[in-house]
Figure (cartoon, rainbow, N blue to C red):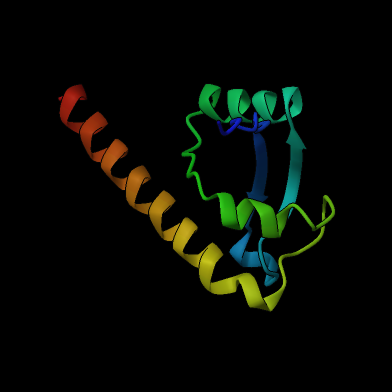
Length: 99
């Protein structure tokens, strides 16, 4: 009989300012209740969320306010592309509903 290990939620919040000329940076991270609070704030402010356990594990090794290393640029670029896509769809739908 295999016992299923209970996994605590983990969340990483990124920020990116293209005008600053820096890589995205970790602005919040946590496990358990802290992760739930990060996710709750994201939902409250309509910030898209993408689940990627492997990326969370890698970025979990970074400190808050630390920019992501070059090795993660491609993976994070895919996350930002997803967020851009979701945001465009959301805004397009909102414009349609507001008409």
